[in-house]
Image (cartoon, rainbow, N blue to C red):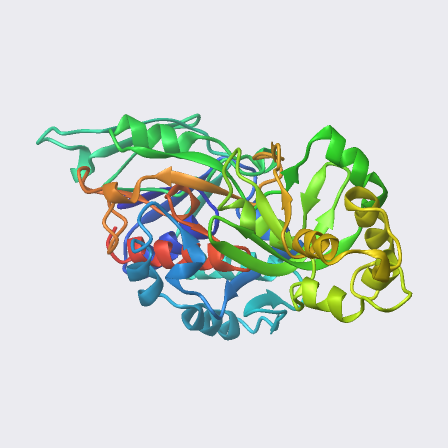
Length: 394
């Protein structure tokens, strides 16, 4: 075998397709019963397969420049051409996010057809038991890598690790990729849940209990990053697109600031209406869901007519509206995380080829690498781009 790819997700399949196109005899080993499980559930089953606005700034890594090379060589436009070649209808939902019009199965079927056309062999239900690299001059068929599965022993010239991260264990996530990296003495940036809901203290959960299910358009800020989208109050804490986005930048102990009135200077708004007889809760109900306005006032200040508040009180209320500070107790962990931040350190890999600098023929691509995209199709674009980069060289 010329190339063995461990992992039949987006990155692994795409790498295998590119290798197959070059005439490389390529095998994909997938431990699950079918390939592309994460593709199938993504985007609510419609697969947010890329983002028109993809840029290096949309990714988190210890080395923010690492992803630039791969992203430049395989762009969203390139993947769109592939989607259109297969006649898959799609649409832009918002903020450059592209989704299939119907099922994400269309993307999986597209990849399978491309793999078949490229002569790629795919083995599902294949558990990798061990990997070894021979340094002997007398190599078996010139192939230095030996991969033992639960079924057989395989050898290959190149080995690609596309095992993903730890997110969503029910889909079969494992730490195999990290274990293999450590086996070959590659360093790891500690994996952590990303694009994940926050949990809150019991006291705050009790105070917000009546608001479970309420969604609000806000701006959320942490560590100098800000996202303007909806948050969703749940019985466990905070979720919604804005929270998922900011969670990737959050670390335990940090607070997040939520601007409940992102289009307004709250103090000016309150001051300009101070002489009216309307109560604070009813006034805020013009900009926020009434149920939320009532509960927020009960939490922060008794509602009364605006004219009864002093200027100092209005300033304090305004600050809490534009900078509602919440300190999460944690996140809902890998079980609910859409992706895994951290992974194989980028300093160990070539940004041009994704090959390990000190282990010739060994490649790491996709989510297992310390490159994590924001919400909105960026992680899929990284999968295509990193898979493409490795696929040109394996």
